[in-house]
Image (cartoon, rainbow, N blue to C red):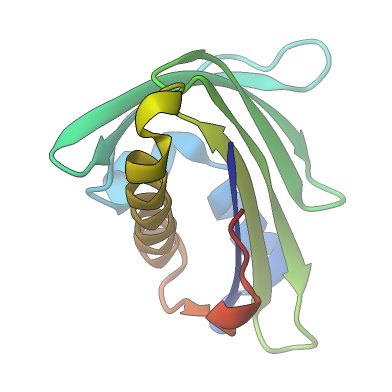
Length: 156
């Protein structure tokens, strides 16, 4: 299993608007070529939503269904894969105000492709692809986005 953590700065948008755009999954395909399709179901009684995703992965596509727990007041989104191409995929978005200088975006995901015999080969490729896809998605949604000190971002 691998965990990817990214911290990014979106200088041209405030935290509330950044959260609104990040949590509007249905808009992703119109904002970036990386996401091919997202279908979002009506919210459940607990406020969560189920979303179906199709995302470019290298020369192919990854597909999965996830449950998303959105907390607008805390500006967080926790997601957990229910079914799909990953053996396991879960994580969280946090959007933090940055003292009048846009927003800080924190993304963390843990994934397992379910292929232990070739994990050492595939996981670094999947991690690099996940990182570049997140950056492309955020640029499409928010405009200018800068990764904060990549040395502080972790993978394990």
